[in-house]
Image 1: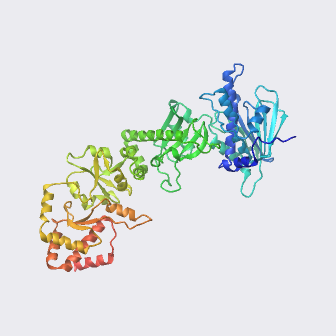
Image 2: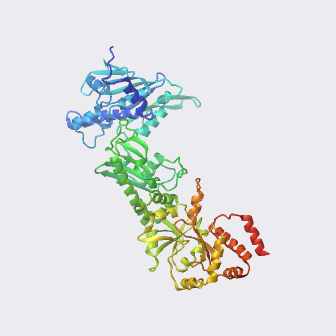
Length: 627
């Protein structure tokens, strides 16, 4: 029989399709099943327009059969079939899509799942098969034809026998090589897994004869194998069902079946949109953080389907980084896919979907915060840090989306509060939103720098995450109220007592004392001055500038440590007994003053959790004081 060449196509093109276009060889089964689904869908469409044709959905199916001994894999459908001319047109001309032509010629409207677009999906079979045979009988015809090819060299077509309409694709699976194990495509468990992964929601049943084992009749020890037909796919995806038909348990089961997590989600979001871009989506907000969430190995993204067929396992473009904890899927008929259907050709539709999902997620989180506070706090314990990273990473560009979702522990409430709740109860004369940073709430509560703010009755937000201050610097203000660290040089708090204390430090001797101490601490502090914030503690450090001491610690703990230093100010409480000792030493014993200066500075470092340059000298100086 004369072999016909592929029209106007070269070996290089088919080699490209087989070896380069598809990332994973397993995709071949997805493509062939999609084509089979199209073939059935065409009968469904014709039955709507042809009164002589009836369509009984239960009579239509796709079947997968394996003959391991002869290395044969068959994909059979009960669809519309192909005539000799259609075999030549659809399979003889590479990249011509019979499905796409059918859709254009018949003006197929919404609701008909014609999946094929490019016509190259069929040729993915050559990735795993050395010979591909297609036996097909078209609807309304008594004749059947066999198309066969071993690749780029061409194909043959000849008449054959076939009892029923439809198409049977027979793949002679390649032998194993050192690099590729083709045997896996003859294993029932592997084929079943591929179908579940990519084609679970094809709307027609995908059947397989699966091998089962049972005890031989009359025996307690001997087993025998038998074959049992099973429908592999779910067919009707949960996202296309009416929300009223579904229970919370249904969504939880879907979450577990898709392996989105081992926890139970705190919330699900079921979305159906019929607008500029049509799509269905089910999103989940997890309860617990994945073990690898803050590692490089964690991969964000939603499952992306096109007309029920899985296109991408993790589509990262659908989620911003700050919502990367969200799990779920999106299914759309309107996506512009590339020739392999593995990646998107244009991203306009995807960006529109992503924007809508982003707004929906934010809205749902705000609803949980407002109506289910305990549930939100549990979520925030797991993912609050990610929201703060979202503000910092975007240089504040995402603050409108995220600022109302933030929470911090409070000196007044002793629990998590929102920025809105803080501002709502601010004192009338209060100018700033005050915060204090530290390793824990317990350490922050003991900081000397909090004394004046606490005495005024002002609420203090406790920043215990390393990202907190950096995020707030990007946020800058909330509802026109600026943020102010309790360690800032100027707290913006005025009182008669403070003014009196300041006046009390203006005489010449005291200024000379501070100048002397500053010189002794040259390179370690920017200034030494009388404190307006201390009430009971003798000393503390404050920062003079945008970089706080806590930010210095965090930056210097990073691998690329650049030894960044905040501008530190040593503040002395002039109303503390220690100040009298300092003045006495300044007037009578400079050596003792040097000792006091070093001790006070190291004491201030310890309060801040900063390392002491010379611990041995520090302990020796304490011993000198004791002697």
